[in-house]
Length: 353
Image (cartoon, rainbow, N blue to C red; front, side, top):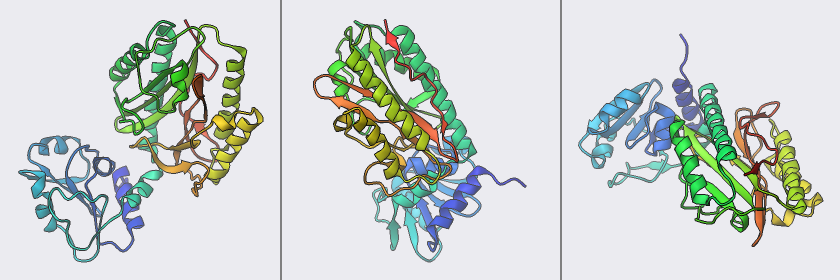
């Protein structure tokens, strides 16, 4: 009998949890990882299934979308912990967040969100497949921008077109942790902000336009950034673009099993130092991607992580010259003995208009 992916995920989580008798989940991301349902509730992770207590209102949706899940309906989430207590074994218990649905947590419950992030770090075949699909669909948005965007359009107009294509492709946005907008379209001097807000600034002839797209497909996301040229750009801008590209490609080459994340970041910085641009690189080189836009591992100067087979990570160096412009190039990759780049839109310098 074949073992399902959800069975393997439960086993991995329980193995990492070690001595804990009860493993409870409350965050929608972790409930989704273990059941296929995205929504509210309190779940207990057993060997053969997840017991999920949710509202009567949500019960039909859970039953229609979850896998290997026993569903218990209650009038409101305030009642979820009372119902769950009857399904707990004796011994230590662990939960993924401090949310108690308005009630005190069960006595002796330990909060450890990191355990769930560690379990989710290595992506299985189904997860990789969804990330590949997200990547291909994001590529299509860049193709749309290449065809439709031009000098004179505003950042907001470009962003609106991108969001329309994303919706038609079945993509759903992540919430951006660094800005109010779910995507980044930053023209000219706005590109000097790594987490630029979308504005009504018009794209000018000679601008760089940084476009960062991060969307989920069926719960799993991809993250891709390209920098476009609008009309005729200066030779200095072209040199800067190709310097960032060289650094990004160096980072992609090193995104393999066993490489220290701090070393990968350091090699990217060296490439930018060779072009006298490292002072304009103000963030880490990358991060894990999956159900959340930022997952394990972290690729940066202070990271102690080492890349593992099955990691899905970004490589995204950028330079940000205050008051002038920015350049960022980013791909999402699957880590193995060789890197597999999942985002495929060209990294040639594409001219808009």
